[in-house]
Image (cartoon, rainbow, N blue to C red; front, side, top):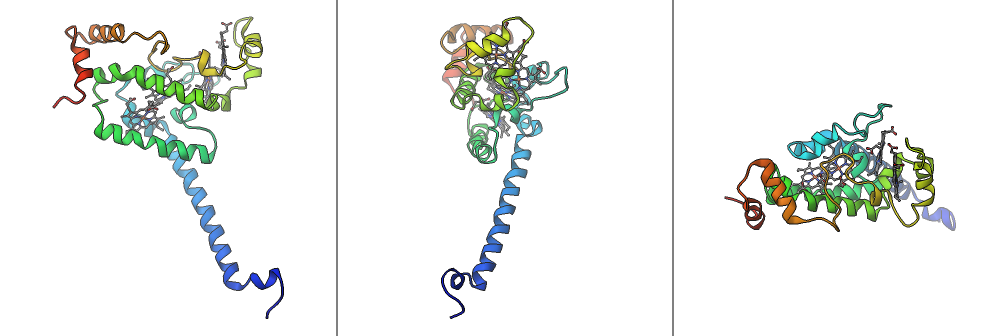
Length: 212
Ligand code: HEC
Ligand code: HEC
Ligand code: HEC
Ligand code: HEC
C-alpha cells in the first residue's frame, strides 16, 4: 500500500488522466470560443443574408453608423452573450443551413420579401424569450437618457413586465408591422406592386413553395 485514504486514489495514471482531461477541456473551450467568433461575424451571416433586405437597411441604421463608432454586428444582436448560450444558438442556427438548402429559394428577392414577416416574428419572439439579453449586453436600461425629455423616465417607470423588443422593433431591417395587426393581404399587394407583379402572384408563390 502506497498510502492511505485520498492519496491512495491519486495514483500516477489518475494524475496523467486529469492533466490530459484538463488540457483537452481547455482546448475545447478555446475551440468553442474561436468558433463563436467565426460564426458571429457579419461576413458569415451575410454570406447567405446579403441578397436579402437584412443587410441593406442595416447599413443605414444607427447601429451601423453610430456617432461613437460603436457598431453592432449581426452576432451582437442575434447570438446570446456567454459561451454556453452562444454555442447553443449556433447549434440551433445550423438549421439555417437546411432552410437554405431544402427550403424555399430565399435568395429570390420576391420570395424573401413575402416570407419576411414570419421571419421577423420569429426573430422578435427569440428576443422576447431571452428578455432581450443581447440588447442589454450593450444598453443599460436605467442609463438610457435618449434625446427627448421623457426617455429616461419611460425606461425607469414604464418598463415593468416589458422588454426592449416589446417597444423597439424595426431597428435595422425593413419595417414589418406588429404581428397582432399584420395583414397578409395588404403585405402581398405591397410586394406585388414593389416588384411590378400581376395581382395574385404573391398568393400563388406562397401556395407553391418551390417552383421547378
Ligand atoms: C447557410 C446560409 C445561412 C447562414 C450562414 C445564416 N443564415 Fe440565417 N437564415 C438562413 C435561411 C435560409 C433562413 C430562413 C429564411 C429567412 O428567414 O430569411 C434564415 C433565417 C434567419 C433568421 C430568421 C428568424 C429565425 O429565427 O429563423 C434570423 C434572425 C437569421 N437567419 C439570422 C442569422 C444570423 C445572425 C446569422 C449569422 C450568425 C445567420 N443567420 C447565418 C440562412 C442562413
Ligand atoms: C453592440 C452593442 C449594441 C447592441 C447589441 C444593441 N445596441 Fe442599440 N445601440 C447601440 C449603439 C452604439 C447605438 C447608437 C446610438 C448611441 O450611441 O447611443 C444604439 C442605438 C439604439 C437605439 C436608438 C437608435 C435607433 O435606431 O432607434 C435604440 C432604440 C436601440 N439601440 C435599441 C436596441 C435594442 C432593442 C437592441 C436589441 C435588439 C439593441 N439596441 C442592441 C449599441 C448596441
Ligand atoms: C415601455 C416601452 C419601452 C421599453 C420596454 C424600452 N424602451 Fe427604449 N424607448 C421607448 C420610447 C417610447 C422611447 C422614445 C422616447 C421619446 O420619444 O421620448 C425610447 C427610447 C430609447 C432610446 C433612445 C433613442 C433616442 O434617439 O432618443 C434607446 C437607446 C432605447 N430606447 C433603448 C432601449 C433598450 C435597449 C431597452 C431594453 C433594455 C428599451 N429601450 C426598453 C420605450 C421603451
Ligand atoms: C441592433 C440589433 C440587430 C442587428 C445589428 C441585426 N439584427 Fe437582425 N433583427 C433584429 C431584430 C430586432 C429583428 C426582429 C425584426 C425587427 O423588428 O426588425 C431582426 C430580424 C432579423 C431577420 C428576420 C427577417 C427580418 O428582416 O426581420 C433576419 C434574417 C436578420 N435579422 C438577420 C440579420 C443579419 C444577417 C444581420 C447583420 C447584417 C442582422 N440581422 C443585424 C436585430 C438586429
